Length: 413
Image 1 (tube, rainbow, N blue to C red):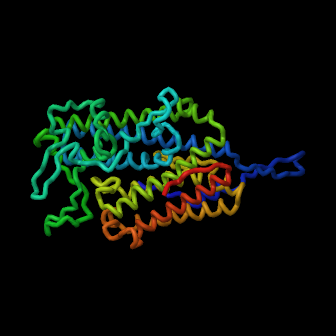
Image 2 (cartoon, helix red, strand yellow; image 1 turned 180 degrees about the horizontal axis):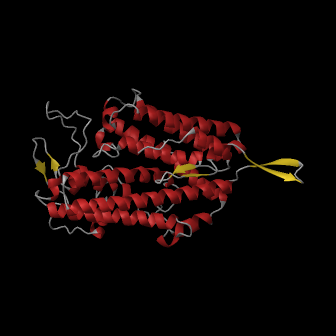
Image 3 (tube, rainbow, N blue to C red; image 1 turned 180 degrees about the vertical axis):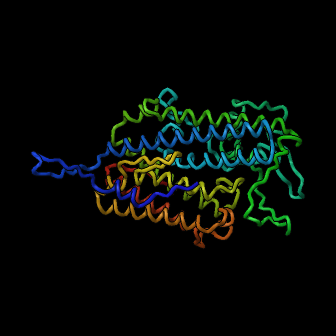
């Protein structure tokens, strides 16, 4: 599923809002109202709340499909569970724009009582060492089982998995989206059965449903999948609840000064654009290969790019399309900045448009992300490099936009 943010939406909300009034029906006076910082901040909270609600609701559907698969493992129920994971990821990926903003998902300095959950690490940590969870293939076509699923001394509970997550090494990932992804798809070996090579980038992981019926540790695997799915849904519900009108973090955020709120918002989208998506998700994958690809098991990384880029763009243009197809629109960052500094606002608009263009070029190749990065290196150029560079330049435009609004941010890289 891909949403198209049209020029119509952008023009509608980056134009000046005019209100006409009349006196004695004889004379009309056009009163021009500009967007304020408060208008932009309010629209941000409305979009964030809607985005988290969509993420939670689609994750609940995923939970149901996974339960159906566990109860009746088959090719069909496995396919349905995978499809529901992919659909829910579209909405979670857009919420990445609310990270690194002193918000509830990844702020570890404040308390739950203030609405701060600090659950990002167990929701979306990556890259994941497959062998930490379950069996992996060896070089001779056999398997090695040194994971938590094969360790019968380990009791699979939510608390135990939380404690194991990133326990020793950063890639000791036990929970979250990518643990579920691995349990549904298995390793992506890019295997070409005809030539017996590992360069068939068109295929993703292909875990058989029999891993949940007749395979070794099938019952423990099913338990693990159920527990980790329930944990993710619970964590997403906490985020959804705290962002709702009257929610704990929503109230905390709305009590911030405009300067602090703006700084938090813009630091989030600036850093995610550059320090996270460009540097960690694109450049690192180009440099180090498929193991640093964001959703490598399902080959969903292109769509992750779509969601991450549009999550940032939602805030820049002040518009979000919900899961139901409704459009939430209001004050855009572009308009707000143009009112303070036309040059910076215009540059931000240009850089944001260019980022969307570079994204569309990458998506239009019809290739999986692992194949795209296999054809590039950090100095070769190419569609992945081009998208990363556009995201870096967009982050600098966001930094200039912040300066125009009187705040300073750190975009990383």
